[in-house]
Image 1 (cartoon, rainbow, N blue to C red):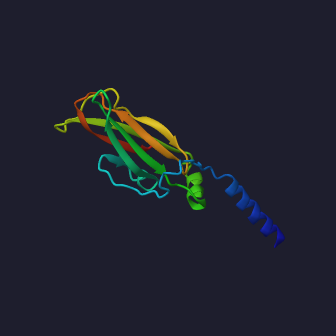
Image 2 (tube, rainbow, N blue to C red):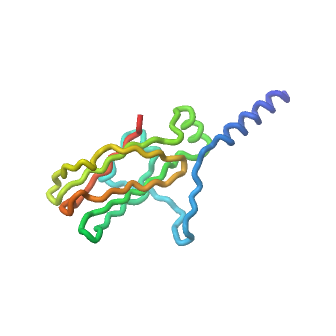
Image 3 (tube, rainbow, N blue to C red):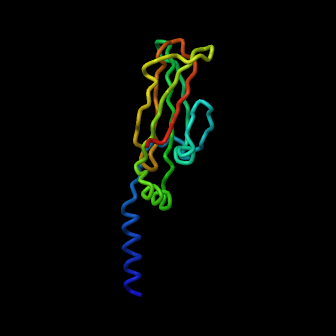
Length: 150
């Protein structure tokens, strides 16, 4: 009985001690509540849908008339069960591929060498910003494609 208790405690300490999360410090003016938004310009695969939550999409025009985009996302794979599953599936930290595509005011895709797949690593609990600037001033819309990296 004593050996079972010791093994259980050792296993618990090992799994809790191996948890890899990110602590974020923000200013006191920010709201602490995180809400997920649905934006048709952000396209995810079925694996990322439950792991990476889109929090905010900001679009602004810079001084040169080019659109700039920032999509804020949160890896909400936190807690014991989420961490354990991520460890079992070798998805901790999480690798994400992303690509911005730009469109003109008529909805036509703008060909650019900048629309390539890039990879980022997102740790559990981490907030990440995907940023891009339009390749021309004629670009009026965008899509952000996200997929799980293999």
